[in-house]
Image 1 (tube, rainbow, N blue to C red):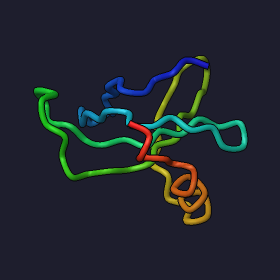
Image 2: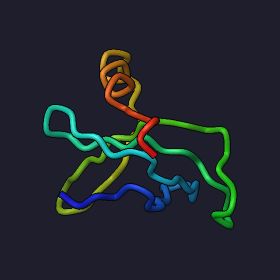
Image 3: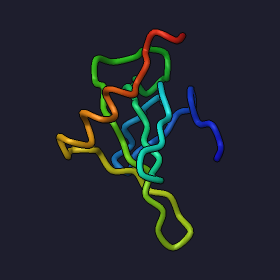
Amino acid sequence: MENNTKKTIVLGDNRKYIIIRQLVYKDDTYYFVSRINDEETEILNDFNYIKEVKKDGKSFCEFVTDPEVLKVLLDYTNLDED
């Protein structure tokens, strides 16, 4: 699995996010992300968990909304490392 930490992703609505942490839970890849401005110079106060979904050979992202999954991801997101 490729490490995507610190990479930028652009969602379908052109919002940009930087990947802060990459996690694997139940064989699915999740990202703890922060929205960044269009110039990619400023981190905005908009943090989320996103799940990577692969379909027909393409990768898509969806926001995590399941409270149980969010709790597990939050427990495993160690923000003190860097």
